[in-house]
Amino acid sequence: MIAVAGEALMDLVIDPSGSVVAVPGGGPFNAARVVARLGSPCRFVGRLSDDSLGVRLRTTLERDGVNIVVGDPVAAPTTLAVAEVDGAGAARYRFYLDGTSAAELRPEHVPDSIHAGIDGLLLGGLGLVLEPMATTLLELMSRLPAHVVVMVDPNCRPNAIPDPPAYRRRLAEFLVRADVVKVSTEDLQFLDPGASTARAARAQLTHGPRVALVTDGAGPVTAYTDVSEVSVPVPSVVVVDTVGAGDAFAAAFLAWWVSRSCSREDLTDPHMLQEATVAAVEVATATCMGQGAHPAGLSYPRPSI
Image 1 (spheres, helix red, strand yellow):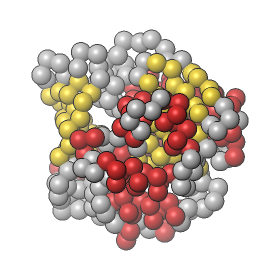
Image 2: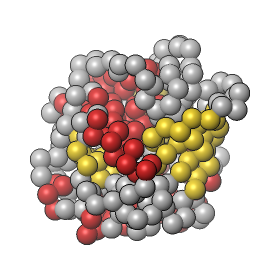
Image 3: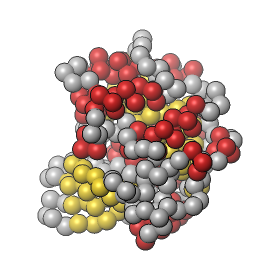
């Protein structure tokens, strides 16, 4: 069982022609759907609105077989993101956060039973930024059973981070209990400006994780540990957009790891790291081949999951 915690929101995706489509999104929301679609039991820990968009988010999770832990909706509008997609399929985001639903996750909304039976926890995104959600997720992590594999995906959105130094300090708090940190090269540039990719990735390991997984768009994915470096190529495909690709990668990596009963200590095994990363790359690549985080009619590959 994998728990995914953080924001659910609506993405307003604007393609190069100016066409707009509203799709359910948010990094943790996307990741929870991928975990479930890959056949792994999944719980989503996040706050949903009682408005029509919140109902759509809830219905989408339920349709994919995700168990929604926080049952009561909040009387606040659904959080929104505007994703402008360029000609290469890359998305630039702006967020509408104040007074919206995603932030309103409080400790009393997370039942003690969330810890029962889980083997993996994935969190990140705006869950590291918005309060009281960020404090709630830190408390959730502090009560985890020792065997649970924790993956943090910062998914840094500078437009949503008013105080970068405070954000970096908060991320370090999350990484104390993390086993894997998944970051893009853009994340690392924000977290450690001017540092090389390898140096910035290994700097994240000093806070606690055993592995830093670094994605680089169409470039190879690299898994860094204290003593090793594993590189996995990304296949060349026709990219429609990259919305949700990083979320799919993180979800697929953790689903592979948990489905094979791999432990926290196993993360030091370069061979196992490579196999899990290859599986994650395949799923992320499939996501890029259609519009939005979960293109209609697209089936995810299930390599060794």
